[in-house]
Image (tube, one colour):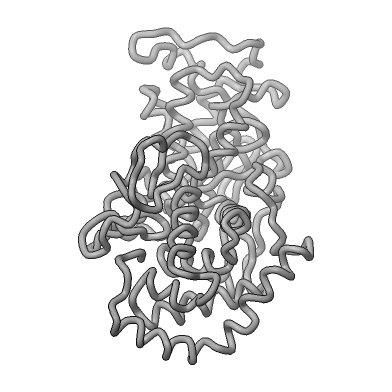
Length: 382
């Protein structure tokens, strides 16, 4: 948690922390440079949709699943770390300790602030005991001049402490201002004035520097570049944009069978509530949604369509899983227990088929306006 600068007593405690962490630091500062140059697992991958979604295959269960880093966060840690010349493993260690890389639903991570006045996935101070290290309002125009680390790293014109890219860049700026290049432990201690916190961050950083983690194919937080690229060049109806925006807001929340929000969802509950946000009522279960139609050819899939899979509890004629297409072969889905709501590819997972729920006769009006017809003819219901 970013807070104000440590007092003199706090600085004396840092000496103890440095001694405890000496062995870790010996490798910590050297390994990231080697890893970046290796082209291996820790090489900078950027923030393209390909790198944030990964391969189509589902992630393999691991005994050390707690060591996984969501692909979207890994890309941000690496690219922002390289941009600010801050070891990405330090940023990743802070992200893990503060919010489990945005996967925590504790107060302040996704909205508001915690009891100390820190907010966002990197828990940067916006008021209270933590002070306002962010600078200005938690969410404000990027053009606004503030005294703090507020940053618009994703280029959307808004500096938001809740956006992973903005928050990670803000944390990098804070660490630089507190001498991370000269004294790693002291900079981490300035971030949160606890010796145990410094040791926890260094533990994760050292683990990551040695490659001791897996990459979750699940994008557990908003990947704006994917959503922008997915819909680029398409004429997406307002209702569909609304449904996709709703689903995007749920990224990172947990899967729970039978849940329809606001804190957790199952697959069909997520798409039902997404379309309900757009003023369109569709059935509750994936089997009912598949029958609701209308069906769409795989060659005519557009953002807003639903993509169906047999799933563990379904069949090709009564699919047990559904996702919301956002374009470019990507969907937003609530996959299964243990996986947060995510952006994922669908093409190589053998989809049963696609439907266009907003084109159903019972959903032809939204807010009193007719929805536009599809650009090409969709196949009739099977």
